[in-house]
Length: 350
Image (cartoon, rainbow, N blue to C red):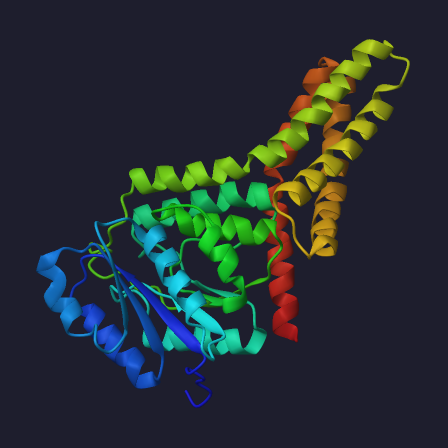
């Protein structure tokens, strides 16, 4: 722990109806030297005795009534943005004992090393509560098909951000747990670099103290993900409509393969253009590389599938195109995972 540089980092803790573990966490963080922003998210008077033991030691914020984790995080980010002082970074963590001091320090060290966003990554095995394991897998699957970028754990609350990203973090929408998924999708679609480091997986009493609602909050998170799906959906739909229209209009003036190739080219331009419009970024080159790489692999596979469906199975032209494109969408996940594993191996070799 000799490399700890806590003076330039805020620790943001959103807290709703905490127990004694919050007091332990705050005191341990203060011993290390961190400055803390503690947000009481409308916990009620019966929890005042918990906050009374720490609020004079921290930057204590209170919002009433309970407004949700997303609102609490934005409240804390707004405070940090207004009181930057000499600070460079901010780390968010849960106040229920799920994040150890050692892991918070690891995130801080990585922040100082890379000066980019850092996410904690938990291990999901048979000892992980089923609702946490299944929910995380579904969000990874759906989000990866949209962003084309794989993250091993996209729902962990232990995250570190440079303060230069405060404008984005404050304006991102979401009042509850879906806010954190909004952050992931927005950062990935804007091609902000996200580093991942392994942390300890801690579930106290099978995660019984969590205020996460398996049905309601899972619905909110999935709704957020599929809102972002509008962009790739339009990118697939527009070339499909053009493909069918031109094939009918020209009455086989162009060969099917020529039309298919033109539609696929239009597809990647549509995806790239829509992303640049809705999620502008300075990392245009990186986005173009990601889109181009995935397009080359996906188009080759879908082209072969199209040939089989159209010429071997004798399916209608439009149906062959639709089915080949549909399969291509789901190739995003394994391709993104393959790219992720290759990147991780290269990083380790360095």
